[in-house]
Amino acid sequence: MNKKEVSEIKKQFAVKHAVVDAISMTYVTEEKDILFSKKEYLHQMPEEEAGQYLDLLKKGLSGKQGKNLYTMNFPTVDGGSKEENIFQQFRKKKFEDDSLIQSVIASYQTSGKYVILAAHGVYDVPGEEGYVYEFMEIALCPVQPSDDKLVCDASRQVICGRVRDMLLAPPTDAFLYPAFNDRCEDLHSVLYYTKKPSVRQDALVKNLIGNPRPLSTDEEMDVFHSSLEESGIGSMEIVGHLYDQIQEMQEAKPDDVEPSCGLNMMEKMLRTCEVPEDRIETFIQIIRNKIGEKGRLRLDGLMDTKHYCIKNNYFDIKTDPELAGDVFVKEIDGQRYLLCPIKDSEVEINGITFHAK
Image 1 (cartoon, rainbow, N blue to C red):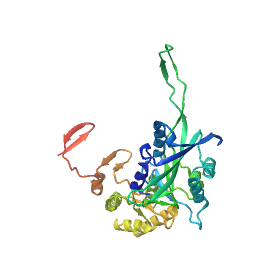
Image 2: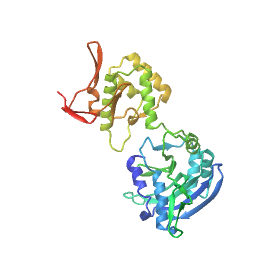
Image 3: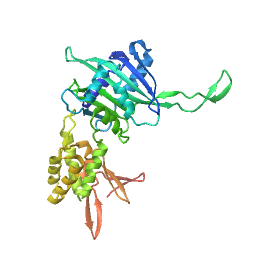
Image 4: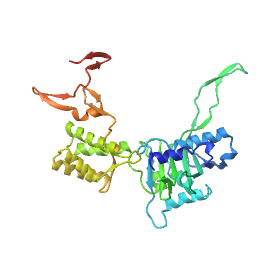
């Protein structure tokens, strides 16, 4: 699902649209026991309460592609994989089949209580006459105590500690099924959300979807950068040229397309930067071992093209990304210097502005 498709579905999680018709709540303890489970219909709820449930569910469709949101495929099996069939049954029977709930409880790693919040909805897709997108979302919401504060009780003329409520927090993980790819249901795909990519729920994702979660943008960046370093490719000129190439490729892509880069493209980029052939060969061997022969990295996962930072133990310089190719190291009288052009005559140091001559 691209950004526009996610946004279109996310907007339907509003009381006024009446798209989401039913929700279920399963309260789970730290010991993986179910305290209670119930199903309710939104039209029978007070509007404010229904809106609060929908706000929580919308959080499971938030964030950035490749960081918080991942469109993932089920394993390719004739007749559909067991994971795909479990999702289908949960949607078809509107939560009556608890196989999916049991899979979540068995593999979700947490140290506290939480609620499995599930929603079912039917969306009449505009512009697609007669086409209906039937979907479900499950969101895993931690149960957390409210703040421990003093309250003023005027009737009793006392100030005392209040009773702490157990609140439903925004989800840490969520799944939307089926994926809304090309504005149509894709029964073989699911949209996975994680609040914190660094807190990996590998067992949960593998158990529910049957495939491992892709690398996040930050993880891809670590793979690419470490491969450059391990292969001895790291001059400022080469990094600057790579930066320029990646930025140009990102600017050329359509807004609704998330471009990626395979081994052949990486090799071509390094050759354009005039990297020695033996270093290119070493780089390809190293990164192949990390992502596989057919592995691909998103362009966003190669370099951060919104910032350009240069630092060592003595300085930390941030400059306009457009100047990346103009910053270089030069040796003058036996001493190496970092040189960058001054585009503006005004320079500020520790809040003091002066004119550079």
